[in-house]
Length: 248
Length: 319
Ligand SMILES: Cc1cc2nc3c(=O)[nH]c(=O)nc-3n(C[C@H](O)[C@H](O)[C@H](O)COP(=O)(O)OP(=O)(O)OC[C@H]3O[C@@H](n4cnc5c(N)ncnc54)[C@H](O)[C@@H]3O)c2cc1C
Image (cartoon, rainbow over all chains, first blue to last red; front, top):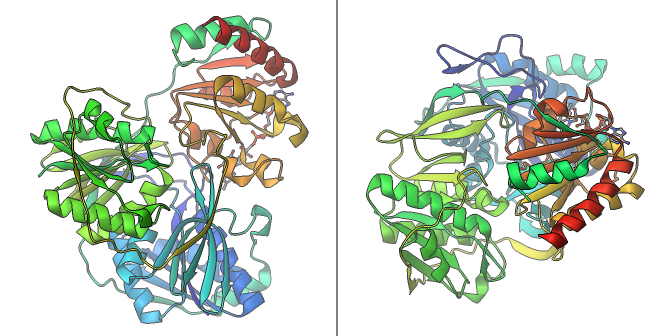
């Protein structure tokens, strides 16, 4: 089985979010970047397939040279090859087109993306990618088994879950559940050394135009301070929720 | 040229999100000088949509659509968009709508803006405001494609009533049913889902163990609320993953979010910040959640919650 895992390079979840250039650009100053958490669950599931069922695992990222440490980390975790499409990931449609082109050339059976990236939270790339490839697609995927050319996936739905059968090629938008938090791997020294020798191929974008562009950013208004209610006076809390906040 | 919405339903009834999407679409249609058309799938009574600004309903009835299938739903909405010559299509931010939106985007060569929180800032160029960095920021995005798809963040715009009524007509598109097979659906029918809930009661590590979750469940019961939890609680298996909320779990945007024994780590807060009113119960007055909450009780959950349940019961029976 040939697996492609799509990797997004995102600010660590504890990052302070600030903007520069008149609030038009994300300020990367002092921010450390990580593998997008949803993608990391997918990558770890891919490693499981590789080890238990035999599979090759390639990772792909659309981004500038600054994303290479994140891509190398995927190689250190155990991916075989990496591809970087050398372009600014300007919008979901653009990224999906570039990924689709890599996916077509590689002839993959299974393409694992994350349900959404934690920077722009679009949640659009995996579905667009599947549609461009005319492949089956399961979003919010929390479990995946593959047997030959058929897959059984579990999808999270509002208030429950749904089990789906699909034939490969398949694209998933994955999340926690594909593997558990405790299954995530921290690269060891040997992995890091080996990752240096693994191929990281840089290719130029196909040049599709994007459909949207961010114009500016803003931050939420600072919050007013909390109203404390004594634990001995919960009637007051109920009164506030009823009369002031009007939520009960 | 009407603004098209997909009015989501479940078991034949429209979901609350459909009314918010309709209200929002009415606002967009007013700005564009046009009307709102809705597509419904297997809903027999659609007249209520008129109350939220919809003037026409394309009613699809087809037994093969009983189970949701993103591909077939996308093909139906795409055909409706073509029939109506719609340039703006609006969906909710439910799990199913977010599943359909990108497929529809490719079918119609349309840009998709998800998590949109307010009416377009301008319609020419078409600029929408959406959340980014998991609610830590807002981003204005200009959509340049001819057809545009918007997923409205739940509870961000609200439900607004309008004058008028909706004319329904049967619509029978060609359905591309795809090749996925839904084998089984496992859904608690007696519980409110986090996505649909007006109130969410959430528990953290401060509750000490799964055996104490009756506190959270009983509090949720009196409020008609959904239950949720922090990430470590689901990682330790005290609660199912489907209850994990936060940056790497489910987003929560309810009217009232009650956090019990949750410290308020940045990743937790990011995911629940879109909720209108936040209440925290925590023994530690220094817990970061107090900086994000509207109301706080410094106290032991094991004492505060049982009392709160009793008092809420009294309040509910009196009101
Ligand atoms: C990459 C990444 C992603 C993450 N994503 C998420 C996410 O999506 N969602 C999420 O929730 N977390 C997430 N986290 C974890 C997050 O950093 C915190 O560890 C987590 O939210 C803490 O959970 P908690 O508040 O339940 O536990 P704790 O931080 O242990 O807090 C327990 C709280 O309970 C209080 N307490 C103790 N006893 C009582 C009592 N008797 N009565 C009342 N209060 C009591 C304590 O004072 C304390 O404040 C993520 C972390 C990382 C690194």
